[in-house]
Image (cartoon, rainbow, N blue to C red; front, side, top):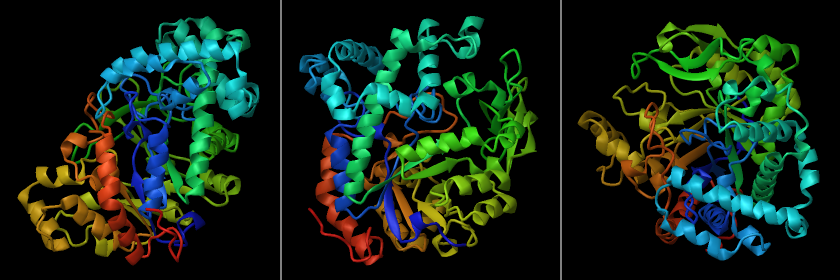
Length: 511
């Protein structure tokens, strides 16, 4: 398979969601630590920074269930900019000092964060020049992003007026078609202001990353959240009944790990409607992602070939059945719209030859996870000797335990297989995996930041199927400093000897 240009050379990257960055505001954001993170990636010889989805989260705080996949999470806004513009006093940020630096308390953060942003917005409306001199006018921003921004800000405004309830519990006058022009609505304007801040700051950070030779991989879930502006404003494109109820929802069938399958609850697409319109909604969605990122990982790629459809009346996923997805017709349109195909297909799990054929037909790289390799089967697809160049190799993903946690919580049989295959004693399992990945045939390798810090299960980012305690891990400032001081040179040298530096000749090492 011929690889796309974005992955035409051997390279390496790190997976870290912005929320996990250090900082003093209760959550990682686009402040100086984000820029220092990019400096570290540059100095350590990495080419890519991968994030989880950046959208605004709701109940459960999952970045994979957001109110709009084109919008940004306001928590990522650097509040220091608002202090510089005299919209907030520095004393206002003192309330964040009580928040933990190693985890996120989303409930407390919500109660502290948005009142400050509303104060800043009130000041902005009185004297917008300070911010608009830096980022351009908010009117121009709204016009440039109107396709997703107007429905999203309208939806958030309606949600605010309906005590944050989901859209299917709103009175009829709050339907998308019944909504009045929101331009004079204060809450609508506030939501536009938040997105103006986020996109402007993200654009500056992305530009800085480009100046350092670092590219950003984003993450796009194939399904959108049930309670989202995308469904509220486009119900005809989903399997939603006229009464607003979902006729069928997404999930996966029973398997070795889940005897009842997984009941996700996301509304399914009406693919016939999308096909009739040349997938224009989807192409706009991808275009928005490529405005944020250099490359986009497509989560649950297999659903483009076939997907598990669960009747809305079912209690779990066992009642579902396989239905055919759009297949090649979708990717033919995508290739015309985005000829470089800057996409990475998440094809983990029980994947058929037909799904793999769809991926390889369009030259999309897939994924492999090193933690899945050591089951004693020499034909395991994820063992390094069975890998292919077009599989992006991860030591673990956001849904896995850290590599140290994985090793110490596993059976002795698996730990023995791991030690024997890698010819190691198992005292530093995450670094053993990192070294093996650098030497693999995979064109791109990616490590969760926790593995570079040798952290255990306490630093796990998400445990699928567990409803609470996820998405809250943060890297403390002292951990970040130790990583930079102790590992930068080593990682750079590993990239150098394994041919994974960002340019064939390397680049000046600024450390």
